[in-house]
Length: 192
Image (cartoon, rainbow, N blue to C red):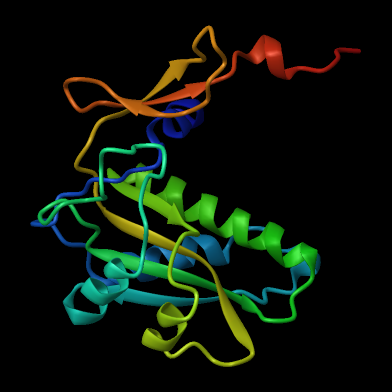
């Protein structure tokens, strides 16, 4: 698969095959991929908390909120939930450069997951008090993002931007998840 195909397949996944759990070694591999990614000033200040299955995974799932644009869907149902999570931690007093590192690490892990047929959902909507407590996050760190992982249990496709320019994703009658993307011609500001 070439890189563009990988990018097209790495859409946010919100339904997983819960009967095919990821192992702790899978999560370690994802963090190993993120470890190799660029870091501002090469400071490497991010840390990662890995959660695979069990009670902590179930509790962390209950602290997350899913797919705000899908008003009639309350999130993954039992059997469709992620089987693992990685919390990306950043220093509590981190500067704006650390936010770039968070994005780079998250995107790296999402692409790595897609390369193996796994799904990833980057979640910033989680209980900001209960999640750090559940995961025993050190007081000098904070959770920047929570990434849910598992074997992908839904089809996700890139769709053309609708005529009304709505960027809201949707599901069709077959449950296929459509993500509208602007055409390249709209994005290129200039050519020299």
